[in-house]
Length: 112
Image 1 (tube, rainbow, N blue to C red):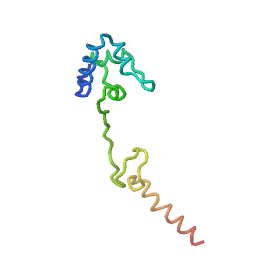
Image 2: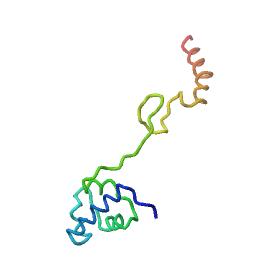
Image 3: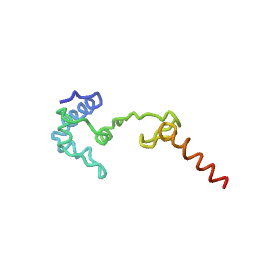
């Protein structure tokens, strides 16, 4: 079993306080659930036992900030986009093909 991260530890402490106030995990789950965001008592019990990390919708229900994911910034354009959408200049084979085949073909086509 993995060690519990700081966010999950804080969520665990808040859940234990709520459990002390409300008495059962079912009552805690009912208090934290919304019509759009259902939380079941099993999820809460697993978080407290350290078997699963607190997900963002549970953190939101506990009025805690969501977990953030670090993503790399593109060195060519400075924006964040999926790695599958690379720029032409980041693919040497494609750049070579464009230089040797595509540019001369397009230039010859434009002059005819």
